[in-house]
Image (cartoon, rainbow, N blue to C red; front, side, top):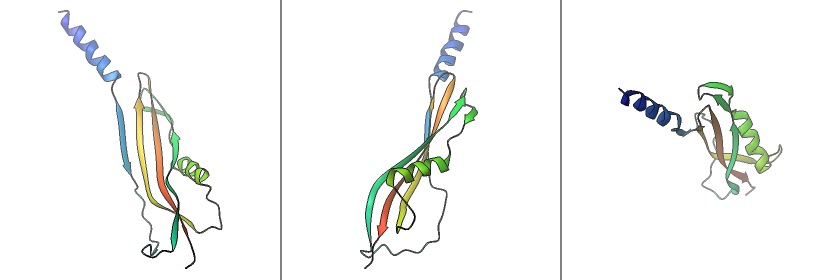
Length: 121
């Protein structure tokens, strides 16, 4: 009879101490037509990253959710994009990951992009 409670606690401990998930995608489309086959642009920064973190109680109750707009703002502040310049984000991807701990989890949204600047030919 003593083995059943021990198995339950072992499984419970295993479930509580496991977990890390990650997924990446960019679910948005654009219809901009740009010809990148010519030498009309230069790479300003490759692999610029913006992040936003959140907090979930017990791993399922969202207290603070990671925000895409905050991650993009972080990305823009890192690379110094401002109005009036012919710069664009290319190869934009987003990744969601979470760290699961005993009583909470920390979801994170990461946006990655390459920044190019168009130049006159």
